[in-house]
Image (cartoon, rainbow, N blue to C red; front, top):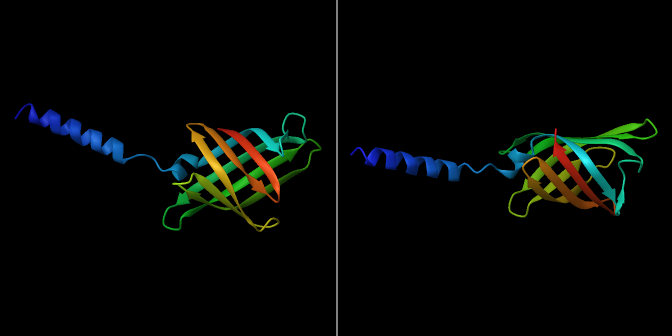
Amino acid sequence: MKKLIPALFALLLTVSLTSCKEKLYNQLEGDWNVTSFEVEGFEQLQGGGVEMFAIEFDDYDSADKEGDFSWKISYDDGSSESLSGTYEVDEEDKVVTFNFDNPLSASYDFDLDLDGDELSLEGNLDGSEFVIEAERD
Protein backbone atom coordinates (compact mmCIF):
# COMPACT_ATOMS: atom_id res chain seq x y z
CA MET A 1 0.00 0.00 0.00
CA LYS A 2 2.89 2.38 0.77
CA LYS A 3 4.20 1.97 -2.78
CA LEU A 4 0.75 2.39 -4.34
CA ILE A 5 0.12 5.92 -3.01
CA PRO A 6 3.25 7.52 -4.57
CA ALA A 7 2.56 5.71 -7.84
CA LEU A 8 -1.04 6.98 -7.91
CA PHE A 9 0.15 10.49 -7.09
CA ALA A 10 2.70 10.40 -9.93
CA LEU A 11 0.04 9.15 -12.34
CA LEU A 12 -2.38 11.88 -11.27
CA LEU A 13 0.30 14.53 -11.66
CA THR A 14 1.23 13.29 -15.15
CA VAL A 15 -2.40 13.27 -16.28
CA SER A 16 -3.06 16.75 -14.92
CA LEU A 17 0.05 18.23 -16.55
CA THR A 18 -0.66 16.75 -19.97
CA SER A 19 -4.35 17.70 -19.92
CA CYS A 20 -3.64 21.31 -18.92
CA LYS A 21 -1.86 22.27 -22.12
CA GLU A 22 -2.44 25.99 -22.38
CA LYS A 23 -4.65 27.10 -25.24
CA LEU A 24 -3.08 29.22 -27.96
CA TYR A 25 -5.45 32.10 -27.28
CA ASN A 26 -4.40 32.17 -23.62
CA GLN A 27 -0.76 32.32 -24.65
CA LEU A 28 -1.50 35.34 -26.87
CA GLU A 29 -3.10 37.42 -24.11
CA GLY A 30 -1.05 40.41 -23.03
CA ASP A 31 1.11 43.18 -24.44
CA TRP A 32 3.55 42.66 -27.32
CA ASN A 33 6.30 45.00 -28.56
CA VAL A 34 6.82 44.69 -32.29
CA THR A 35 10.50 44.21 -33.11
CA SER A 36 10.12 43.88 -36.89
CA PHE A 37 7.32 45.07 -39.13
CA GLU A 38 7.60 44.36 -42.85
CA VAL A 39 5.15 45.43 -45.54
CA GLU A 40 5.77 43.83 -48.93
CA GLY A 41 9.25 42.83 -47.73
CA PHE A 42 10.28 46.33 -46.63
CA GLU A 43 11.07 46.96 -42.96
CA GLN A 44 8.92 49.74 -41.51
CA LEU A 45 10.68 50.04 -38.12
CA GLN A 46 14.16 51.49 -37.57
CA GLY A 47 14.03 54.23 -40.18
CA GLY A 48 11.23 52.86 -42.35
CA GLY A 49 8.62 55.35 -41.17
CA VAL A 50 7.34 53.59 -38.04
CA GLU A 51 8.86 54.54 -34.70
CA MET A 52 6.89 52.18 -32.44
CA PHE A 53 4.32 49.42 -32.89
CA ALA A 54 2.63 47.56 -30.03
CA ILE A 55 -0.13 44.96 -30.00
CA GLU A 56 -2.38 44.18 -27.06
CA PHE A 57 -4.52 41.05 -26.86
CA ASP A 58 -7.14 41.34 -24.10
CA ASP A 59 -8.61 38.31 -22.37
CA TYR A 60 -10.16 35.82 -24.76
CA ASP A 61 -13.75 34.80 -24.03
CA SER A 62 -13.82 31.10 -24.87
CA ALA A 63 -17.66 31.08 -24.77
CA ASP A 64 -17.92 33.86 -27.38
CA LYS A 65 -14.74 32.61 -29.10
CA GLU A 66 -13.24 36.10 -29.33
CA GLY A 67 -11.28 38.75 -27.48
CA ASP A 68 -10.49 42.43 -27.94
CA PHE A 69 -7.23 43.68 -29.45
CA SER A 70 -5.53 46.96 -30.24
CA TRP A 71 -2.63 47.97 -32.46
CA LYS A 72 -0.86 51.17 -31.41
CA ILE A 73 1.45 52.64 -34.04
CA SER A 74 3.64 55.77 -33.75
CA TYR A 75 5.25 57.20 -36.87
CA ASP A 76 8.57 59.00 -37.37
CA ASP A 77 6.73 62.24 -38.21
CA GLY A 78 5.16 62.34 -34.72
CA SER A 79 1.70 61.13 -35.77
CA SER A 80 0.12 57.98 -34.40
CA GLU A 81 -2.88 55.76 -34.82
CA SER A 82 -4.69 53.10 -32.88
CA LEU A 83 -6.56 50.28 -34.58
CA SER A 84 -8.80 47.99 -32.58
CA GLY A 85 -11.48 45.35 -32.79
CA THR A 86 -11.95 41.72 -31.88
CA TYR A 87 -9.81 38.69 -32.60
CA GLU A 88 -10.57 35.00 -33.05
CA VAL A 89 -8.10 32.12 -32.86
CA ASP A 90 -8.19 28.96 -34.94
CA GLU A 91 -6.21 26.59 -32.70
CA GLU A 92 -5.96 23.82 -35.29
CA ASP A 93 -4.71 25.92 -38.21
CA LYS A 94 -2.81 28.40 -36.00
CA VAL A 95 -4.52 31.44 -37.49
CA VAL A 96 -5.64 34.62 -35.76
CA THR A 97 -8.41 36.64 -37.41
CA PHE A 98 -8.40 40.36 -36.69
CA ASN A 99 -11.89 41.88 -37.04
CA PHE A 100 -11.01 45.58 -37.25
CA ASP A 101 -13.40 48.35 -36.22
CA ASN A 102 -13.39 51.64 -38.18
CA PRO A 103 -11.59 52.84 -40.23
CA LEU A 104 -10.76 49.41 -41.72
CA SER A 105 -14.04 47.65 -40.83
CA ALA A 106 -12.83 44.36 -42.24
CA SER A 107 -11.43 40.97 -41.16
CA TYR A 108 -7.94 39.72 -41.94
CA ASP A 109 -6.38 36.32 -41.26
CA PHE A 110 -2.78 36.05 -40.09
CA ASP A 111 -0.77 32.85 -39.74
CA LEU A 112 0.38 32.63 -36.17
CA ASP A 113 3.62 31.24 -34.78
CA LEU A 114 4.03 31.54 -31.04
CA ASP A 115 7.11 30.30 -29.20
CA GLY A 116 7.01 31.38 -25.56
CA ASP A 117 7.54 35.15 -25.56
CA GLU A 118 8.14 35.41 -29.32
CA LEU A 119 5.27 35.99 -31.73
CA SER A 120 5.19 35.96 -35.52
CA LEU A 121 2.19 37.03 -37.60
CA GLU A 122 2.04 36.77 -41.39
CA GLY A 123 -0.90 37.85 -43.47
CA ASN A 124 -2.39 40.08 -46.11
CA LEU A 125 -3.98 43.39 -45.12
CA ASP A 126 -5.65 45.45 -47.84
CA GLY A 127 -3.63 43.70 -50.55
CA SER A 128 -0.23 44.09 -48.86
CA GLU A 129 1.78 41.27 -47.29
CA PHE A 130 2.53 41.95 -43.62
CA VAL A 131 5.12 40.15 -41.49
CA ILE A 132 5.08 41.15 -37.82
CA GLU A 133 7.58 39.88 -35.26
CA ALA A 134 6.98 40.75 -31.61
CA GLU A 135 8.18 39.99 -28.10
CA ARG A 136 6.07 39.88 -24.98
CA ASP A 137 6.28 43.10 -22.98
